Length: 243
Ligand code: MLT
Image (cartoon, rainbow, N blue to C red; front, side, top):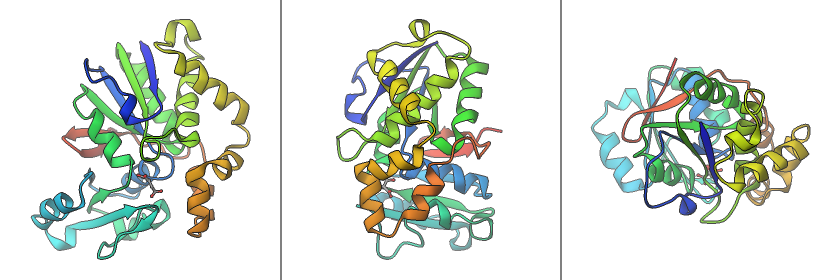
């Protein structure tokens, strides 16, 4: 197994395909996706385009769907939800499909959706992702941070490092690393692993969310290995828990 870490979707190679590609958006899309599935959502269907989300979700029975729309950290008017994982309660999610579009996370997912296996990861479900990789040993793994509108995000790369660090219990860095970004991500994680919430406070999107009253979201998203959920793409853009 060779890991390649890409800090943003734009850095993913245009050519070639991974055996497994993993989208990360710790703040907050992939944390929300794992939480929605843990709360009993039947599936999460991701869109980069809001109009397309509306069109596709319209074909779904109203009582069986929820629409989540976020731009710039805020809820889009007319949607049931924004992108806070704390809104994903079992009462709301049970048996429903969550149709979601966010600024960067759903765009990241779209960028990798041609891979043989597509997963989403966040700190909250890191170990479920690691377990899948150890059990299936895909030959090439792309771990892709969503970043923010084309730039690097601390929280996504620290999560990539948390995944790689856990895999290093079984294999050493030289065997695992397909690019230099892997060592960089592991270094970021080992520097901050006991202060992840503090790191999220330093992150530019963490600051943006704090201005939008998102302190509780940051606390939630900074937790590690609290959800045994593995969101895996079933058909294009549709994620279900791979039990
Ligand atoms: C994104 O996709 O950029 C994020 O999930 C933004 C957010 O925090 O809602």
